[in-house]
Image (cartoon, rainbow, N blue to C red; front, side, top):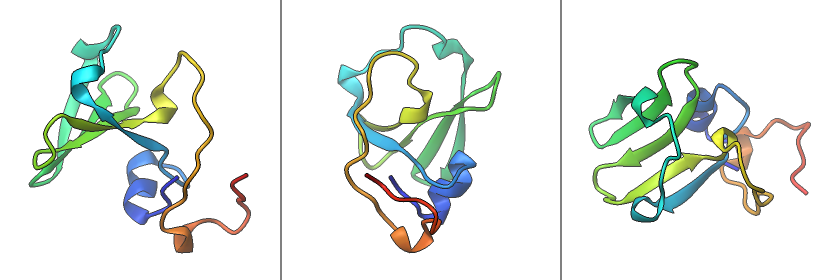
Length: 98
């Protein structure tokens, strides 16, 4: 879980739950035609659903073939519990990762 202010703002939440994924081993089942990109910085894009606005993934042009999948957007399968926390100085004091 990342509690940095960039992730909080990008996710519209208290934290970002992301996972780096090798894009060459990742495939969308459907909905890829509904994705739009926002260039957040010269080398970073955020990809979101144009229908509902949900963040789906981001990527950096200086890290080819790596995407950071927004795990809150995964609707099938079982996701593992988060194991690490980053920027905990921005973490709300009522949260405790187990």
